[in-house]
Amino acid sequence: MEFLTVNELSILRWVHILAMVYWLGGEWGVFQTSYHVTNPALSLEERRRHMETAYRIDILARTGIVLLLPLGLHMGKIYGFVPWLEGSGIWWMWLFFAVWLAITWTAFIKRETDIGITVTRAEELLRYPLIAALFVSAFMAFGGSGPIASGEGNDWYPAKMALYAFALCIGLFLRLVMRRWTERFRILAMGPDAAQEAALAREIGMARLAAYIYWITIASVCFLGAVKPF
Image 1 (cartoon, rainbow, N blue to C red):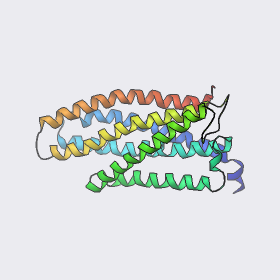
Image 2 (cartoon, rainbow, N blue to C red; image 1 turned 30 degrees about the vertical axis):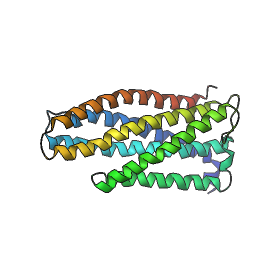
Image 3 (cartoon, helix red, strand yellow; image 1 turned 90 degrees about the horizontal axis):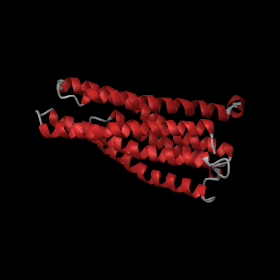
Image 4 (cartoon, rainbow, N blue to C red; image 1 turned 30 degrees about the horizontal axis):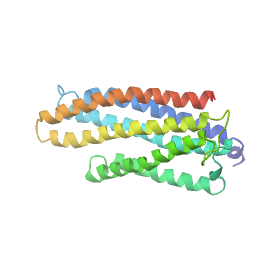
């Protein structure tokens, strides 16, 4: 126990790096697999196998992105940026994100069912107030007020928070595309459908453009956390 107490920040930083690696690497794996998922030259069964691979890769990225926020807030508490997490606040914060992670894994495990689609939509809805809260907290911190206590030399922390919120926005769109994969492949399983194929091609084209912006954003979050430039 003493080891954990003495090395609390270092351990959190280590897990934070692992979460970031799984987030970035997982998104790259899904991006590459999507070429086969949306390739009409392949059989439907082959495309479904690639979709299954994409989901199995994506759950690691989803786990990483969920864990990054509580890890960042916990480290922020140690740095003195998040004073409201002192005392029992830190435990309530981790409980909230444990529930979020459970919802994320439930959506993955039940992804081929109506329940899974419903849970996925619920997880998406959870992100809207969270994104808004992150943006508001970050911009209030730049103004010297709000729940985040930063200042000259520490503005990298709310800037990182705002970029993370922006990444969640992009992630919402990418999650929507993957959820539609499941819905569209249910229709395609009943027979060829040119409208569904066209919709797949259109959506994946937009998703790939979003993915490039996603990677730049993730890299920027990494830079701010590692360099702390301002």
